[in-house]
Length: 407
Image (tube, rainbow, N blue to C red; front, side, top):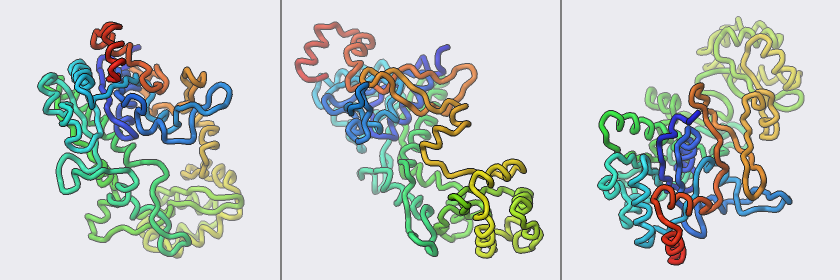
C-alpha cells in the first residue's frame, strides 16, 4: 500500500540533523525525498565519525553512523549550486517539488536565487521550510546556531544536571541533540499543516523554524513553573519538580527509576517497601506534602531500596501497578522484550555492507504504514536517475554537466 505522502516530492537541501530529521519523517511516510548535496563532500555528517558503517569484511566504509541516523528513504543528488548551471538545476527541481527544506544561514540562498521569494515565482505551490538557529528576524538572526549552544541559551541546561547539593553538580546537556530532533519534529508538523492549507488555498508558504523557539517551547511545565511564580526552577538531578517520589533510587545491584504519579500508587509502593506508615504520615500522605517534604522522604526511601535488586523491585512494583523500570544502556535497550516485540530495530540492504541497521520509525498508521524502501544513500547515488526521471535530461546532457563539475 502506498504511503500517506506518496504523492509528495520533497527537495531536501538541509544538512546535519534538524532538517534531515524532518526530511526522513516525510520520507518514512512515503514522500519522495531528493537530498541535494555538495559534490565531493556531501552532508557534513557523512564525515562525523567514527564510528562508520562496516563493510562485509569488517572494515570501515565512508558512511558515518551519524549520517545513517537521519537519511533513510532518500535519494542523493550531487549538485554544485555555486555555479549558474547548478542553480538552474535546483530551480528546475524546486519547480517540480511540493516541499523544500533548507537550513542555510538567513539570506544564504538568496545569492543563488534559491530563496523562497525567488522560488515561489516559479512554483507558487511550493512549501518552503527554513530551519535556522534563531529564526529569520531578531537581533540573533545572523548567528549560527548549534544544538549544544541552544540547549544552554534556551534554558534546558539550567534544568539538567545534579543539584547544587550533590557531588558533580552543574549543568549538563542532554545526551543526544534533542533540540535538533525536536526542531525536525516541529518542522514536519508545520509542513503537514501547510500541505493541508494548500489543499484549500492552492498556495504554498514559507515556514520559519528556529531552534531557539523550539527549545523554549519545549520547556513545557518548567517554563510554566517560572511564568506562574517568577521563580526560576533549579536543577534537581533526576528528581521531578512537581511530583515526589519520581526519580532514581539505589538497589542492591545498581539503580532503578521509581515514578509515582498519584497518592494511590504511593500507598502501594509503601506496602511493597514494608513501610505502610509513610502513606499515613501527614508529611507524605499527599503529593503536595511530599513535594514540600522531599528532603525528609527521599533519604528514607533510599535506605529502603538498597535491600532488593533492581529486578526484584521492578517485578514487585509492576505486580501492584506502580510504574518503575531499570536504567538500561543501549545494549540492554535493543535486547528488551518490548523493544523486540515492537520491531524498533530494522535492517535495510546496503551496497557497502550488505545490510545496515536502523532505528524504526515510531509512527504506526493502520492504513498507510511506514515503509522502509531505501537505505541512507551513498553520496550522489541517484544523481543520474533523478535528473533523467524528474527533469527529463538525456545521457549526453548529464555527461556534459559532470564534465563541467556541476554534478
